[in-house]
Each structure stands twice: as C-alpha cells, then as structure tokens.
Image 1: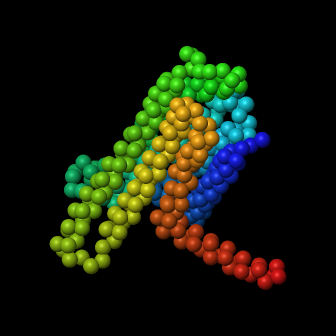
Image 2: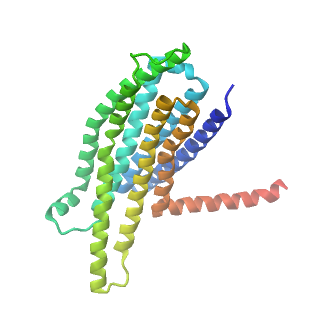
Image 3: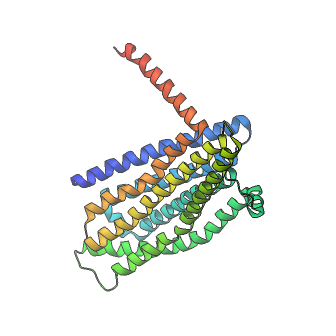
Length: 312
C-alpha cells in the first residue's frame, strides 16, 4: 500500500516527465520536418534536436526509475537491474548536459563580437570546437560510469540491509557514498564553467556593443536583442542546472544522513525540472519553434470550439 507521499511523488514525477517529453518530441518533430522540407539543418537546430533526443531518453529512464523506486523497490536488490538504470541515466544525463553546454558555447561564438584574432579563428571553426568539446566529454563520461558502478553497488547493499532491518555495517560507508556522489557531480563542473564563461563573455560583448551603438547613434539594433536573448537562454540553463545537481546531492544526503526516505522523494522531484522546463524555455526562445507551437495551439483551440456545438 502506497503512502500519501509516494502517491504525490509518482503523480508529480509522471506529470513532469510527460510534459517534458511532449516538449522535446515537439522540438524533434519540428526540426526533422524542416530538415526534410529544406534538405538542410542549421548548426543551432542540430544541437537543439540532439539535446531534445537525449532528454527524451533521460525522462524515460527517470520515469522508469521513479516507478521502480516506489512500486517495485525489491528490484533494487537485483544488481543488473540497478546498474542498467544507473548507467542509462548517467549516459542520457551526460549527453543532455553537454549538448546544452555546446548550445551555450555556440550562442557565444555566433553572437559575441571581439577583435581578438584568436576569437575570430575559433569563431570561423565553431563546428570543430563543438565537436572537440563533445569528444572531450567522452573522457569525463568514462569517469562517470566508474562512479556510477560504485554507487550502484552501494544501493544494492543498502536495500539488502533494509530488507533484513539491519543497521549500517562497516562495509557500507555513508561517507564513502557521499564522497563518491560529490566526485560524480564534480565532473559536471566543467560544463558549468564553460557555460558561465560564455555568459560572462556575452555580457562583455553586449557592453562593448552598446557603447559603440551610443557613439554611432544607430536607431535599429538587432545585435543587442540577439545578445539579450542568448544571455537569457544561457542563464536559464545555468540556474536549472544548479537546481538539478543540487537536488541530486541533497537527495542522497537526506536519505543517508537524516534517514528520511519520504523527504528525499520530494527533493528528488526537483531534478526532473531541468530536462523538462529548459525545453519549454528553448521553444519560447526560438522563433521557428515558438511560432509553430502557437500555430498548433491556435488550431487546437479552433478544433475544440467546433467540437463543442457538435457535442451539445
């Protein structure tokens, strides 16, 4: 019999995952249809599409993990099941994080303007820069998988002890787990710093551009709006990413240190906000996606208005 907290957890987790998947499926469909029609796909659309695909996988595995956690917790005693969930979640979460980071770096190189020869050289080769970032992230992925294996073994031991109603043994160290979890999340410091640097450099580029606009008395300025829009996209990613990583750390700390299972469930819900909410922000910040979405909503509302008289 599920408790009230577990019911709330499942309902909210289901709602978050479904809305997030709808947003990401919408992004993939719009960009793929546009690709088929025009026979080409811009670099930004390609990154956003890959990001949406990785988030669909992340939300699916998150939904599956949430269901197992509440409905079939005995599966945690099966080492292979837990490792499958953990490794698949790690892979999809890693790709989601790095594609979002590449999008932030792409915004910086495409919109910012500096007179440095090094910047101009990198801007001309932005595609290669992003490819190198993704290839470099595979090195960090190897570390993440290693940490995931350690964490999976720990949770198998925890569940087996809970089944026996036994206390913590020397073989299962809370400190070791928390240290491993911190080290695991520390690998995400690099994409965070890359995105933060992109945001700061975009801000410096905007300040410099604004000063030039005032000196030259330019009336219509599209570059300023592009800077502001890109900064909003990068800032939203950073804020949601901080929430995502913090909730993962806090969930483990609450469960192990305070030993409050129900409280850790509620905190864990915050980690799903990142792949769901950020996708809606991307839709609102992209003219093509926003206009397609508004057109789809308008057609849906018209269809519902026509259906009401027929139903009555």
